[in-house]
Length: 184
Image (cartoon, rainbow, N blue to C red; front, side, top):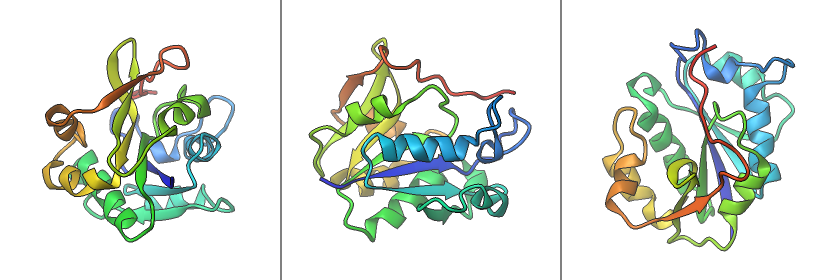
């Protein structure tokens, strides 16, 4: 089974004060590089990184790492633009599922990704849950990509699709909080 990591990192990070793709933690580690490592270490065969705001500066942070960069030209219209651009790029590959992760999930680890990629196939649709509450990352099998792309809009991403389609919640509260970071 081929699961490709799809890292969404295109936004301007207006509440953060800079694009999250350019953010570093208190130890100086790039959020982009850490997230790519989590996806690869957790079992993704490769990683596509979707950039938008400050795309050139963000791409420079990934020098020396084997990733595919996708630029969402319409990133300012919301997270859905990034998701759709990434899924469109993956459609041209042999990937059977996309593990979609946001760049601003600092406590999501390889163990969370590993739990989500076990036993998936092109029909899989599942997302991490924290104390029973759905969160990120989310695994979207190839059979769902067109449907997600057709209804994704604004900052809702794949949420409307998940709300209208049966999916599996994979409990991960023992591994992380899944909380995104929106402010400095």
